[in-house]
Image 1 (cartoon, one colour):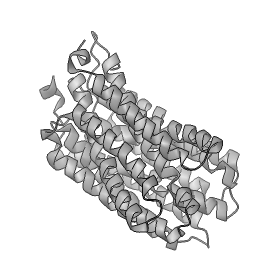
Image 2: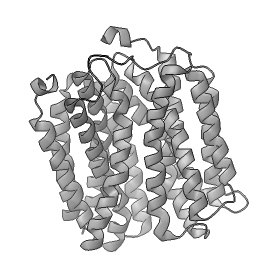
Image 3: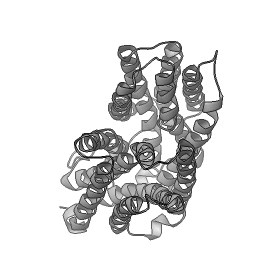
Length: 380
């Protein structure tokens, strides 16, 4: 079954990773876009969180729809259409304002981005070394996000940083559409197994753990700037910490790509979840030292992207037919959208430090669930 799934060439994989990275560029530029929307009076600051959640959640059904479309329609047509739709909706938004308009259009953009992500997911699921391909995908998308996010604050269109960011997202959609022209039409997901579905108790456990992990990560990272301000650090310090974290995220992903296949997937996830919980505690203990916070940020970034590819490996162990792995991004982004909202409620009830405690509990819950799930159960 694995051999049958291994049909994607390096060229096709590279194109698919580029397309998926263009789709997820929005996740890296969200802080720039949302901050500029508030500064230019086009969105109220209280609505920022809702807008992020709307787009991230829209990517989830978009990726699922993309997988379904790829079973029936050629990959080239699907990706070109989604890329043009992504570019078009961002061009349409130039000059627009107001929560209603932004919410509707960002939802449409998120759905189109999800369809593009499906291209990358399907290609990755059909190579021999899924963990390595997943790690490379993470490294490429993070590098693109870091470069564009670092450049955009200095760029404006007619004095607007919002419109410059929207133009960058439109260009990314166009690049995805152009790259899609070179995709093979036969790029399709693995056919469903009539005897056993992709979403079994075992695969749902692994997928839920993946959602917990990224949700806990974003619960920390989403409140990181406010947490630093709470303890008296300047915005420039946040920029330094975030930049170094992004660099070590790429290092973590590349390390997983190099050594991931020799490490046990589930045990590595458990160890990394415990390490992430410890690092959350280390943030609190390091609150009085800038150097210590930078050190913890570097370690946190490494663990973040080092861990994610092992969820793909765990899902392949559970489902060698490679169907369950297609739902990985949907569960991860679902967790990344929902858990920070729960963390926000906890912060509102207690304090900014409650976000750290909430994330630490999520990491430990993940470690417990993954640790208790034996391989024997995974094949029941």
